Image 1 (tube, rainbow, N blue to C red):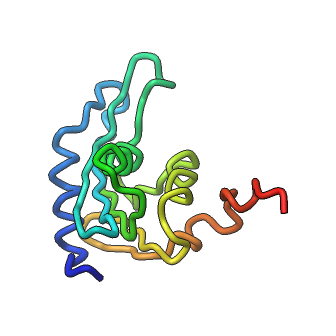
Image 2: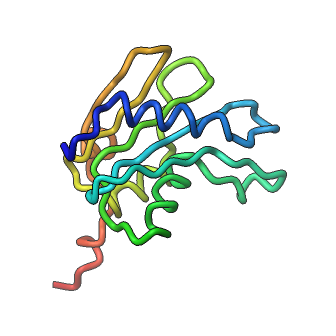
Length: 135
């Protein structure tokens, strides 16, 4: 798939996690997303004392790509400093639905174990722009 291996995407996510700003939770997260163009964009979680102003790593990575002109992403990797797989929150899943195809891959890492699933497995029956169609 565009010549990028899973390990390369996971390495970019791990590197992004090093920049996490998480003084409140201590839960560091990094993400990297592969655009349809073949470019990789990364992001980390950035917390704020006003918790609603916090942004997750997944959205940070996707929005970074969007800011550079990308609109379609095919694979997303997520890593964290916590135990267990770093499951994306509902808001991040909704953003993924907007910019990734249902068969897009999600890679989650837990202490070296990798779980790969399709977006439609992670977010079945998601609310998409097609639901807004009046036809």
